[in-house]
Figure 1 (cartoon, rainbow over the protein chains, first blue to last red):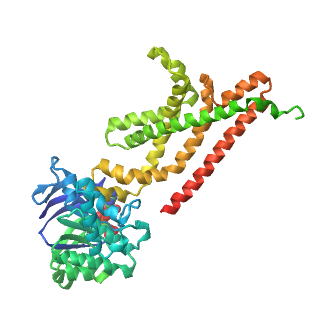
Figure 2: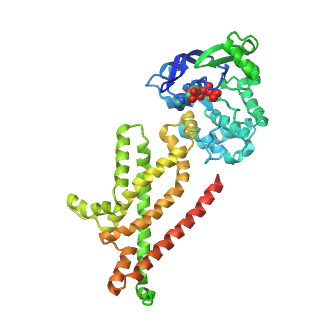
Figure 3: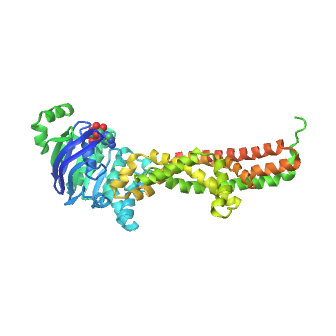
Amino acid sequence: MIEVRDLHKSFGKLEVLKGISTRIDKGEVVVIIGPSGSGKSTFLRCLNLLERPNRGEIKIEGKSLMDPCTDINKIRQDVGMVFQHFNLFPHKTVIENITLAPVKVRGVNPKEAQERAMELLNRVGLAGKAGCYPSSLSGGQKQRVAIARALAMNPKVMLFDEPTSALDPEMIKEVLDVMKDLAAEGMTMVVVTHEMGFAREVGDRVMFMDEGMIVEEGRPEEIFERPQNQRTREFLSKIL
Amino acid sequence: MTNLDFTIVLPYINLFFRGALTAVEITLLAVLIGIFIGTFVGMGKMSRVLILKLICSTYVEIIRGTPLLVQLLIFYFGLPQILGFTIPEFPAAVLALGINSGGYVAEIVRGGILAVDRGQMEAARSLGMSHAQAMRYIILPQAFKKMIPPLGNEFVTLLKNSSLATTIGFQELTRAAQIVAGSTYRPFEPYITAAAFYLIMTLGFSWILGVLERRLAAGD
Ligand SMILES: Nc1ncnc2c1ncn2[C@@H]1O[C@H](COP(=O)(O)OP(=O)(O)OP(=O)(O)O)[C@@H](O)[C@H]1O
Ligand SMILES: [Mg+2]
């Protein structure tokens, strides 16, 4: 589904990604962990070209993102992204947040988009908030709307960049629950998170990144119980 | 002090009212032109297309680096020499003020766009919107809201600057005062009256703007 080969990314002189290679299969849930500044967000953002890699190859369902002929807007329609700070559109109601892209980008008719949005809001438990503005929602509610907004485009992959890091502890579960459901339905997911419980329970694979490289990856129980690399062990001992 | 007599302007008071109305008219039209030009120039200045960026920056620098009075004179007296026909006073004043305002509004637009959180553009693009769509549906509506206070200031500035249209013989508020001063041989009272008209208009407008701002702030 996603193939990454020898991915490099620098900001000026700072080399942030130093040759990342991996593949993510359909329906797989990959959890990325690693210390701050290790390049987790940058890697995720390369997967929908919010950052342009300097070198290497990314293919999504066989289509190269690095090929200048590829229509990047088209690719992004199939790659949903959920941000740490939600990034809901504050001047639009909850339902408008969800229907805007399907209507304007995919050309879905507004009525159908509304129905689908209500369906998604039901699924994230927020049907009652359709007409509200984001400012009146709690953090957990905002993030669930953001997930619904991304799902409205019927993406093939969902990227999550620390979706619960900006939330009060009591709201983390409601967002993780939505993500668990999504994983159970077979969505392909790449999740950067510090929620090790989630990684263990839902992850098919855990990827430990440090200094712009994938240091170690494997099944959650392998990484958490028998980490092979010294740096992985150090990191885990600090956070567990 | 004893020889001050404001009743001498009373017979001409309609002239002042009409002048004030014209001043508001030119200003409104000029601001609209300014917003139109400014939106494109402001975005152009942020463009990645180098030539566009250069043109837009040059425009802003020229407008902001030269006096409005000189711009007006070029427009009304200078251009006809090249064009071969004169532009009537009203459109000349509106256009010159509008083009001038465009340079300042461009900076306001740029500031407004930069004030919108970067995450908004990223969220829009990640949903597959093109840059233009993201601008139109997500960034500009939010930027305009942030631009309302500085645009209000621009309106006030322009309203005062509209008095410069007097120099091209245009019949607005300042010109009204000149006429009255000329025919009564008493310059003090008519000019004070004109100043009072400007002050009432700018204060009134600032007040309306304040109310509007509080409304918008409540909307967030
Ligand atoms: N747009 C940018 N311009 C310059 N430097 C950047 C930019 N984005 C990220 N960086 C730098 O790249 C490095 C990696 O950043 P990245 O956000 O990918 O790390 P991360 O693993 O997600 O960290 P965190 O856990 O803190 O989110 C950091 O040193 C960061 O300062
Ligand atoms: Mg990060």
